[in-house]
Image (cartoon, rainbow, N blue to C red; front, side, top):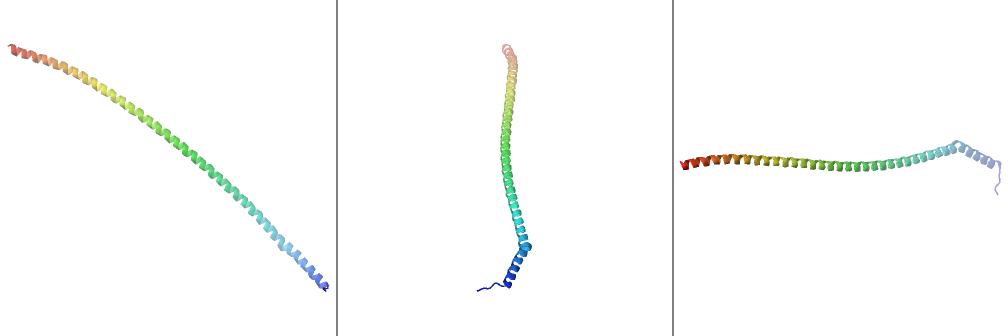
Length: 138
């Protein structure tokens, strides 16, 4: 059988002292560093997820604002086009009215000129007729 002597107890005590010293000098600081590292990694992961979420929300907000701006620009463009078409129609109407007025004025002037020419021709006809009569009767 195995006998327990003083050497075994001394080795047992040295092993426990070595384990205790290693734990205090090496394992405890290592555990603290690992725990601190895990905590920093968890904080960084949380910060990364928060930043990613904020970026996504900001991108969605920007996309929404861009969509609104595009819609406003399209509405404004359509309004300006409609206004331009209306102004064009008004201008064409004004031009047509002016042309009609000028045509009416030209017709009136032609009618007046025709009357004057008829009057002159009638006077000349009478003068020519009286000359013919004179020649024929003489």
